[in-house]
Length: 460
Image (cartoon, rainbow, N blue to C red; front, side):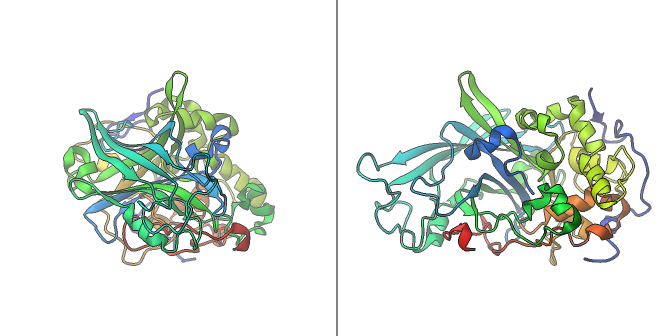
């Protein structure tokens, strides 16, 4: 099964039904109103290699650059010592970019880690005094990393001896964690920046969605399940031309982004984690396909009928109908094909807007259906951001990339119930999970994601 789409004809999508409007206002509702944590059996038992979230957005303070970010290690309890959280030294962590639409990476940014452990047999402590810099002698355990850029023409080392921002042990041990964060931001040749270290868990939602969709009657809402937890973050801020097809972001502004982890096994490295759009593996893939999906590269998606079928006939829509009586839109769901597999343009499905398909790139070839987070880098930074992203009338938000403010749970529920197709919010889901923002504000400069907390979750 090979689903390829020509830029002009866009065949193979089975386009059915069309909306009358032809601009972003089509996606704006008439009235205003999770990501992948423990999403698969194998990664739920291997948290250091569990990719929780991917973000891609135009840098608000440097709009000629794009910020790409991937988080790992879900549910980091801030007081979880004495062996605090760390990246896996037996793994390769990757952020990958497809700019021509063939579902294969034109660029891979890859991190490899090593431990610097001076504790030996003398102490159990992570640090034996206040830590005021990344080079402080009191910091007894740290991680260093190498960051490599890989393209079809070869590889280039961007950072050879970077230092990971440590876990936030507490105010006595790290009285000014912001300084440690700042020191962990590394400048790259050409004007980019890189970061690796602990951060606040910026994803927000009520995870009781798994209790028959919020208790079967929307009674289990309003609790930010992830409040107070931390994660480990890998971040890049890069000139747009560096990641665009043929180095020209004006001519070719759309990129596809995803993150993977390759873990070393007896026969070499094996991909064990994959993440792009939020909630796809959790809420779209069935249990028996989750580990397989984590092992696939996007160019294989269209060749696995079960993957495509779960998008064109989503289980979640049927659950919303059976539990809440919200009529499931007719199948096949070509609107979801646009959102998750092809990107959105006026001529490839029922959502009539030129938003974020790589076919919008003037030098793109044939498009292969694949799940990735697509970002149109030419979309201006929103002056008045809306947490509902595109369906809230804000074309810079999810599913056009993803920002920290995007309420991806509410957006996803609305989209699965048909909001992107109708141009109107589904009234029965208008309140969503009643968790509308993270408890910590996003920073104004790279890496933007809030500092990690140091207060136990049961005290929040």
